[in-house]
Length: 127
Image (cartoon, rainbow, N blue to C red; front, side, top):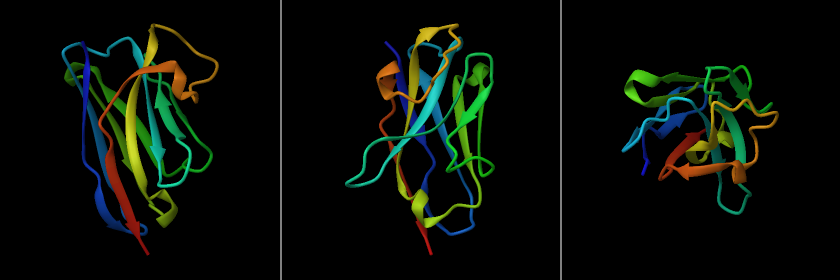
């Protein structure tokens, strides 16, 4: 049974950078797409971006050009590098593993397509 452990996050001023990590234990997520979602108080869960099993990254328009997703399968880790952070990026960020292995989806944005989730980490961007 896979567990996803997240690290990083914290408080940063607008324009700054943070890097989040998502590390799998118990089972490798090599061969699986990994997504990043965020949820702020009073708001619905929002797709941030994801990376396919073969390392193609996808991003929501709101973060495109500012965030970069990468993966290191040898370390069972996926990273979310966040640059040029804005106050509206403030949220709890979750990583999640796509349910199908070696699968190229047409849409990675639906949270219902992911079956393992990290514990979440707070990102706060001050102005």
